[in-house]
Image (cartoon, rainbow over all chains, first blue to last red; front, side, top):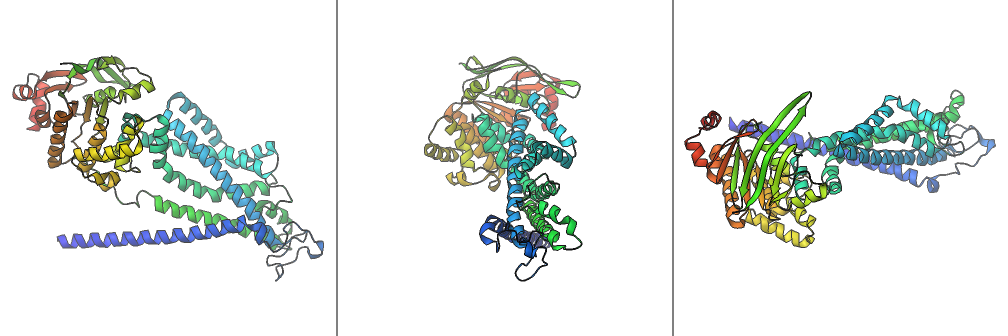
Length: 297
Length: 251
């Protein structure tokens, strides 16, 4: 009787370990792919086969060939070079955007959650206002007011996206705040800033990191969307969204002009989302080794 | 003998929805130097609230708390931090009372470092205190989830005595532990009381435990002190009906 329970327990532990190993392998693979993508984007200027901005009307709208693997657009610019260059704009703007909203949102959430009271209610109502608008519409309005340009698009999207992180962080802080170890930290005479950054922040980074990673893909799409509408990157600059908008009238005659940046967006967004999913699997508290607690029943 | 702590007509009301709940109605008591006072009562009787108010973790609605003759109620944050040199607390859930991301030693060092001690000196001291509390100094390098509940509670006592407080509050410090470990922790607390001469406030719902360690006991019911005396007096001939009920429920 006892032996069988021991055996099943052993089998369970083995299965659990196998699952963990699989997740780690997934993490390594997606991490590697994302790093490759980031490197290509970072060194696009050195890697491109042609100048992505050099126009040559003699070879306009050529289908994919050996010299131009992804064809050329209507000004005769090499699509491969432009997609690589565009990756730099799109990916790094998205990373910048996610970095900004994660940092800002988390700081606001930490402050509100720890402080509580009227300031907390006020800031949370403000974030409610931002959340009440449909995000993209609000971003279009803000970007429209600020005018075009990739930085303005980042600002517009940051305006509508920070409340999500503020709410997430605040909710987590409210849970952690009542843990005995926070009381213990107060009793040891630590200042509020030390309590927040040493005891609370490290314990809420998990969910925030997961949301941030999952958001990179979404933000990339929204940035490309704004550019597609002409509110993001300005014409000569290569950017996936504006490149797609450039080629949309030629979808039927020369589809490669729109397919190349489109597939690039697809692949990049998918990679970041898969990475986000895997990060969640790794950081999911249920997957972690069970913590034991002593409670008398 | 001089009173380390004096609590005068303490009152605390919580708001829960529309209702006001009187957690603490009217509680007064004194703790003398080197004395161990027990607060006994069922859950919800307000004993933990009293502990939190004394430790400045809760605000006080009415009444006064004097530590070494000085009022510590309604202090500003900075002054509050100074109070923590003299009052330390041991919590009910040992594992939860340590930050899971920080090693035990680091947690013990925190209060010493906050008082301006140098890091490497605090490190040595933390190991010493772990040894006083019956743990190997190596525990300083472990994380809270790597040790058992009893070991964690010893570490949390080490943290509490690391800055040699005048008053040690034990808020149900043993109720999350099993019986044999309970006895060890109780023995440790009694030994510390003798060694360092610190006063203790034991919050407990277990009269049998109180009998072993406390010099004096207050029975609390619905936020009021219903009976006071030495543990033997109270257990041998309880006067109040509530106390009788408490004793019956144990035996």
